[in-house]
Image (tube, rainbow, N blue to C red):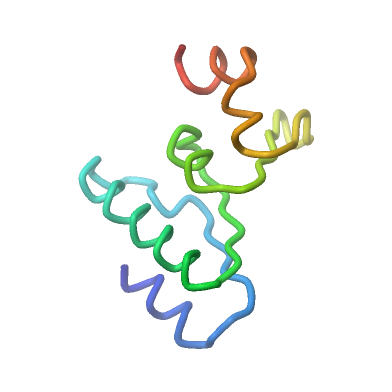
Length: 93
């Protein structure tokens, strides 16, 4: 949360977040994503790089799937979350 606050102090037009949930307990991850969602609702654009695909796609409007450093899929987050490939490979379904 401190890192988010420090980033927001500069009043950026775009907030870049790289793996913000890395190493956090599950409860803290939920709190973090709730805070990110709140920041976005206040009009801040966010570029999120995150391995937690399930939470990321719930938060995002668009998503990009990278495999071995290359974009292999992109589209609206809702559409990506409904794709069988994404469900099997990244969502454990």
